[in-house]
Amino acid sequence: MYSVLALLCILPIVWKIRKIFSLYLWEDLKFFLKIIRCFLKIKKSVPPRSSSGMLDVFLQHVSTRPHKTFILYQDQAYSYREVDLKSNQAAWALRHYGNLRNGNCVAVFMGNEPAYVWLWLALAKLGCPMACLNYNIRAKSFLHCFQCCKAKILIAAPELKAAVEEVLPDLIQEGVLVFYLSRDSPTGGVQSLLDKVEASSEDPIPESYRSDTTSESPALYIYTSGTTGLPKAAALTQEHVFASCIVAMLCELTSEDVLYITLPLYHSAGLVIGLRGCIQTGATCVLRKKFSASQFWDDCRKYNVTAFQYIGEILRYLCNSSKKGNDMDHCVRLAMGNGVRPEVWKEFIERFGKIKIFEYYGATEGNVFFLNYTHKEGAIGRCNNFQKLFQPFEVIKFDVEKDEPVRDPTGHCIRVARGETGLLIGKHVASNPFHGYAGNESQTEKKRLRNVLKKGDVYFNTGDLVVIDKEGFIFFQDRVGDTFRWKGENVATTEVENLVLMLDFIEEANVFGVLVPHNEGRIGMVSIKLKEGRYFDGEKMFAHVNEYLPNYARPRFVRIQESIEVTGTYKKFKMNLVKDGFNPFCIKDDLYFLDDSYRTYRPLDQQIYKDILEKRIKL
Ligand SMILES: *[C@@H]1O[C@H](CO)[C@@H](O)[C@H](O)[C@H]1NC(C)=O
Ligand SMILES: *[C@@H]1O[C@H](CO)[C@@H](O)[C@H](O)[C@H]1NC(C)=O
Ligand SMILES: *[C@@H]1O[C@H](CO)[C@@H](O)[C@H](O)[C@H]1NC(C)=O
Ligand SMILES: *[C@@H]1O[C@H](CO)[C@@H](O)[C@H](O)[C@H]1NC(C)=O
Image (cartoon, rainbow, N blue to C red; front, top):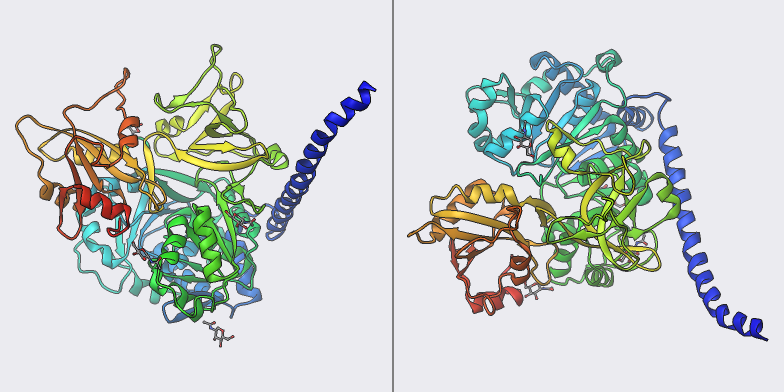
């Protein structure tokens, strides 16, 4: 009798568990098998022991489908063969005029254009790593980025002349060769490169020129914002760059696709996922210097685009553009990227038609990757136990105020329960390493967490807070520590602080990111303590940040405080400031707002605040 009752009681539970289990177990397994399939396909695409797999795959396309279009840019089309020949010429020119040899690093400082692609291939042919400088950086940051990868040569777009001239004396002093990608150079001490490339031979580059390259050699340096102030160079090995095309393959990019890349190639999304994905699959890629919402769909129609890459902002800007009768008139079938919010995603699909959206999670240098392969709204992926075997990760308790993981009395970190927010960390294991950053071991060590669950283990600290729900779906919550994200770029608070402190009327500065309704990420804000007897000079501050900081890193709001609170360990308190935001209705301190049209910081009154919330002022 009792056993029958007991059975009746647990039956619904068993039923429920079974349902969840079988539903997602099947999806999880399917995804895991897809990873394995893609992985084997990638392995098979090159000869065993190939040390520069990406180049080998590219050269195969050149021989099997030389006339297939590889790059579309403005009104030009370049076939696989044309890009190959151009990269041969560039390699010969760099070898001859730059005395470039296997292993020497070359930094490129330019926007999205076909030359980015053929220079990358040229460097691969010479076995030389490429450092991808963010073209927004200037002065001290520029020099730092250049130096930490130990580059011998700088290749810059001529339109970035002013930024190059600013650091030129330092570069020349270090014996760096500087080239403009043009046919002549207006700057003394800088040579032209394009004329030399065009005059060079189209002959293939002998393999012996890259014979020292192994799969562990650095192939790319990609910069991520540093928590310690200056950007950090993540060194991606040949193997990493080769294998990274798996993301595009998991997102089902094929050789038939035309991928539209508006994200900058100096980030890994555009270069290592997008362009690298095209090279693997033999697809066509459309390059555009800068994303433009008004041009987007016209471009898609013009180039017959079938796939594009996004960050959350892109989809939102597209949804915000005025409706047109031909909104559905395109052949885009897939989009891959990260940071889309569920409501934007819904609106996007309704308006522009059924486009398959692959939302993924991953950092350039990190060792944790998720993809939302189930149709769960808002999730960045699933806690997939099969995938976890090869890519172990944990979510641990994190003390946001102290800005560090919580440790138990034995010194170990604590796993959070399902449904609870915690810090995402990826275990450093042979199958899933964290390579760290070039040039500064202390930066690498800062991203490592040691003795996490047992003595001696090492994890990569993603700096991201996530929550895993009862069914195993992972949701992104926030970033921690000294960076925040705005317009798809990471901003390091200390870098901005140091810059703001150069102003002579400022005693102390505390930079943080605040939420703005209807916007992804956080916008920069600074709380300032003025020097005794000085006043806040908005015009001067505007001119200063305008000159030295890229748009996305400039503090849009200023709060004047009597004193800057610090913790017991002299870390600045940011929590309450972040919570207060820039709301003049509840903040008594003086607030200012960076107004581009007035070229100054204006007092932030309640009207401006309302205009921002009601989107009359765009940020
Ligand atoms: C796009 O497709 C149309 C029709 O198939 C074709 O005529 C046109 O040349 C294509 N455009 C490009 C840039 O490939
Ligand atoms: C776009 O946003 C602006 C405010 O920033 C708003 O006035 C406008 O109605 C929006 N347009 C569309 C089509 O959503
Ligand atoms: C990814 O998530 C979005 C919603 O956030 C969903 O609409 C989309 O279908 C998901 N993608 C896949 C491949 O399941
Ligand atoms: C490395 O980074 C630390 C900050 O973490 C800094 O103090 C130090 O000067 C840097 N060293 C070099 C060689 O850049």
